[in-house]
Amino acid sequence: MTALRIERVEVRDIRFPTSLEAHGSDAMHTDPDYSCAYVTIHIENDSVLKGHGLAFTLGRGTEVVVQAVRSLARLVEGEDCHEIWNDFAGFWRKITSESQMRWIGPEKGAIHLAVAAVVNALWDLWARHENKPVWKLLVDLPPEKLVSTIDFRYITDVITPAECIQMLKEHRPEAESEMKTTGFPAYTTQVGWLGYSDDTVNSLCKEFLNDGFTSFKVKVGQNLEDDKKRLKLVRDAIGPDHNLMIDANQRWDVEEAIQWVTELQEFKPLWIEEPTSPDDILGHATIAKALKPLDIGVATGEMCQNRVIFKQLLQANAISFCQIDSCRMGGINEVIAVYFMAKKFGIPVCPHAGGVGLCEMVQHLQIWDYISLTGEKQNRMIEWVDHLHEHFTSPPKVRRGHYIAPKDPGYSTEIKIRSIETYEFPDGKYWSSVQN
Ligand SMILES: C[C@H](O)[C@@H](O)[C@@H](O)[C@H](O)C(=O)O
Ligand SMILES: [Mg+2]
Image (cartoon, rainbow, N blue to C red; front, side, top):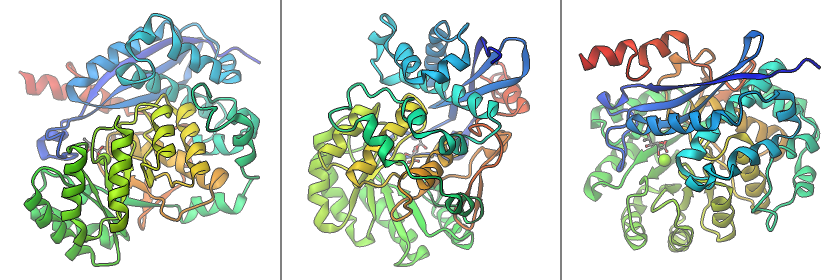
């Protein structure tokens, strides 16, 4: 086998000025510029095969993650990809446990976002090398090989490699073709960004209903009366039978969360997302218990820093919906560990995708879950926000409220050269023009 030696890990700071129109705004992030630390892995003596990975960030935070990727690069450059893929868990542990770097984590925060960008680029590269989209690579890998990519440290009290191997289904060609034709259900958050006017919210509800969407998420948490007004508007627009979810982006204390959400019960939310600090496992459990009689579930995960927090949220009955994020944890290796744990606890995964590049990635994971792991669509949906996909070489296809399984090789994470030239910070064409 010819070596695939990694020559260089290139990283860029890419920022889109989404705050100008309040796209992505919520109770805590009032001026989000959707951004990412964008990694390209270059292979020695090969100008065609490259791996692209990213970690979603907001504006100024990006420079920290970019620097963290630079610090990790020395652990990656010079390595042979085949050796990485043959012992991916070993490589994952090497880069997350490096004796001096781990002090600024471990396995959390900016350094873990940087791990995600690099690890996701390695999966993109692997899938391109196999000439398959990532979901298909995941589906086709022999169960032992797929499970061998996970570092089970800290979770063996809940799940073991042998159990995961057992859980995986035989190949299901009919499920694959279903994903290529009908696709996997999506929900939209676009109707609910906090900075949007009522008129915009109203017309977006109509637009998404016409497009076949049946589930809608709205931001809450800044002002109770405004929340009631907006939720009434959306409930009236979408009707009593469609799903309505609410998202507070960690705005409240535990008791405040319970009181606030109780005030909103008449709008029949399916879930309250991120009611409080993402690290407060027992707080989530208290909220979940209090809201259960109202039939409102608790969802969280977009800021769950690693598999350990997810493990405890599941153990503590703190969530009814598990919202993995493709680049908050350390990339696919760690995310699939959470899918396996969620399956064991019987909790549906509804991936987080409100950001740049997230819809692109999570569709692969959920489609793999449907084909190979749970076979379930009940209570499961992938978030969809229609922002910035035009910057990707393989944008996701959403039809009649469903994600259609991607066909192109890779993880759908490659950004167009022209977009990089325009939105790289601070010297891209856009940023240099607004700063002058
Ligand atoms: C700042 C971002 O848009 C967040 O508001 C977003 O990720 C959100 O929490 C979501 O659930 O999509
Ligand atoms: Mg959210």
